[in-house]
Every structure is written in C-alpha cells, then in structure tokens.
Length: 116
Length: 114
Image (cartoon, rainbow over all chains, first blue to last red; front, side, top):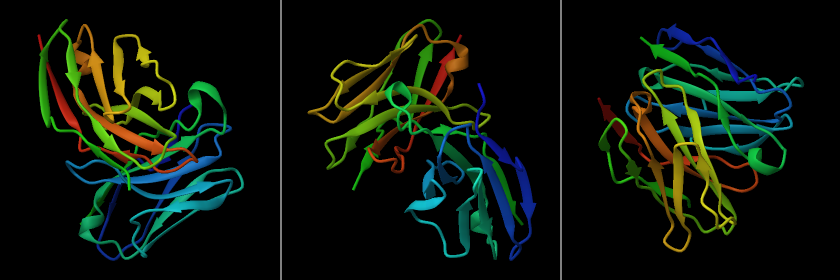
C-alpha cells in the first residue's frame, strides 16, 4: 500500500538559511499534519491542513510557514534557521473515511534536518 | 487540555515473554481516539494499534492488545510472545475527534533480550 512520502530525507543547512520540506500524503487522504521531534523527545504538533486550508496550529515558530496545494501535497518552509531547529520533521496524513481508518494518522519516514 | 503520561521510561522483556506498557491520559472530550505508535531505531513512526473511546471492546492486532479502562483513563499495551523486532520506543497518543492533533506521551523504550 502507498505510504506518506517525504523529501528530502536528510537536509543539512547553515544558520540563517532557509529550508523547504515536502510531504506527499497517502492517495485520497485530504488532511496533512506536521510534527517536530527533537532528540530524545516525543513528537510535537506544528500545523495541519484540511482540504488545503489550515485547520490547526501548534507551537510553530513565526519563521515557519506551510501550505497545502491543490494536489494535497504540503510544504513546510523554514526561514532564518537556528541550531535549535535541528530535529526530525514528520508529516502524517489521514483519510475522511469511516470505520477502522477514520482519523488515523499515518506517518511518513521523516526529514532529518541538521542546522550547523 | 489533553495530556498523556507514560510513567515507564524503559521496560525489558525476554523473547517469547509478555510485557505490558502503561499509559494514562486526560481529556475533557467525550469522543476521542487512543493510539500506540512504535518508533524503532530507524525513527519511523509505525502505527501499532488504535482504540475508539466509545467502543468498550479492547482492540487487538495479532500479538498486540490493549486494556482500555475509560473511567480510569488508562490505556495499556500488552505485547505477547515478544520478538527481537519489537525492541523500539513506544509512544502512547490521544486524539480528540475532528481531525485534531495527536498528543504524545514521553515514550517507553522496550528492550528485548534473547
């Protein structure tokens, strides 16, 4: 079965640079979520989109922005990168379906961002 | 606000044995979901099992089962016939209905010895 695709898988940036992370949800999934997981920590919610509209916002810095496009893929844009932004960034998607899959978030493999 | 608490930072089990990971949660919502995710060294987040709060029957997935105690707000994961491949960090998570965010516990690292 198709899974969530994230690119790139690894990214190394210098401080104050910008980064763009991409997420391609499972086909027919219309809701996308972004999470940040620091070393030794649990994932923290950043932002979500439903049908191309922002649906919820967590502890996302103002330096970060995101959007969902007409094909449902999403991009997380990160500017003025700081050392503390080094983390694993997950994208997850969920389906509007019913039954066992309802509201279940499936995660991509993550993008490992290292800021030097 | 939702909170999820995992009080066991690390658990150990021998192959073929059974282990139970604990999780408690708090939410003001009446309709919600609970999940266990597994994160192996590759750091992929893998869904293990899902429980709908309105269902009294405990969810099972092969060797994985949960003990859902709604009144006590407890959601433990039982792994039967443990295998070396079960070694991972296990996160308990809750989600209020309406396509909202997952709130995770701090995780329990499971060690499996031969």
